[in-house]
Image (cartoon, rainbow, N blue to C red):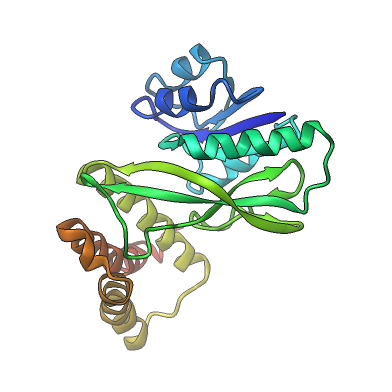
Length: 258
């Protein structure tokens, strides 16, 4: 009854733990891999996943949607390789499967799942990082990714409800992991600014280098109580604000390039 779908690129550190948590739950596992250079494909195949190799896109949601399009089961769970389904969420999914097996009419067609985000040694509890709900479980054909932004939610044709349980998101166990993703996301944002033909003038200069970083930092660290999460909360808030400045500087550096 369940298709588990992922998009991967060089995820040999995370993939086995992710797949083992759902292996006995899934009727099929479909992975669209962006031509990884590590052991990602080998690990996926060893755990009975169907692997489709393609190019690694700047917007990895394109590959996620490719995986979603291949799902054949009535219920679909879309995961990232650094996410693990906890026991409570597993029971919830089994409950939905049982309802589908009985051909019961379900009002929701998709479910939001809470995430616990791991950052430099701790799960963040504040700063907008919990409960961090994401739509990942849905009835096949009822949800899709617009694939326009790396932080977008799925578009759903119908009612969305809240799932029980969590995804344990081992997103940034070290600052080195965070910094690598920081560079990827700011480069993608710089391309978006270029595509949108952002005007270069004193207002955008001050806005992206001062106003947006300060407002973002204060929102995460003070308004959303990121300060509760110790030094990790401060670092996360600081670099979330810095995201705007770095993206803008990358945009300025490359705005005239083809």
